[in-house]
Length: 223
Image (tube, rainbow, N blue to C red; front, side):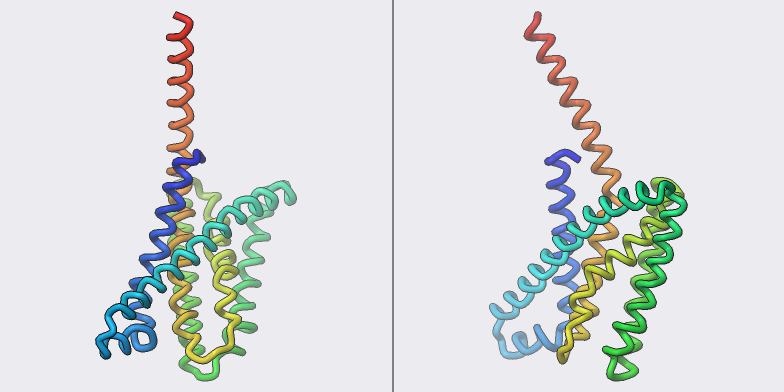
């Protein structure tokens, strides 16, 4: 990918993370972070709280982008180590199952103090899995069928790893953050997975055009 296209790719992912977190933060954390300022007429503080949510979204976007490019490296290592994409896909499916089991048994169940909390966590897990399946379906449809398992792995395993720090926090009122931060991670990861081929293709066209311009200048200089 060229620097220009990488910057566009990075900036759009950054905006997705910030907008999703800012908008959903207004809904999910309204009572805790926004309503008190609005009811007391502290509009500056209200705006500052919203901007803080956007900055949190920017941070999650950067984390997601780091995770994405790390996964591209891990994926290539996996294919090289197992000498077969099919075998690597089976390994990825096994890791997906382990991660889901870990989430339910070692993260959600010990953390949930009430049934409502457990239902919230399980609902978020269902949303994560549903989103992963949809994104993997379109990835396979728009590229090739063999990409389905890898896309599913990225959307479930890598998203979970990026989501894990907030899941490990043991504080009051953490549930709203657990719910909120899942959405920008999923949104940015889905964007990266589905749009990377477009920017790679644009970069290839840009390189070809640049080479043509260089050749034209060289020919003109000789003439």
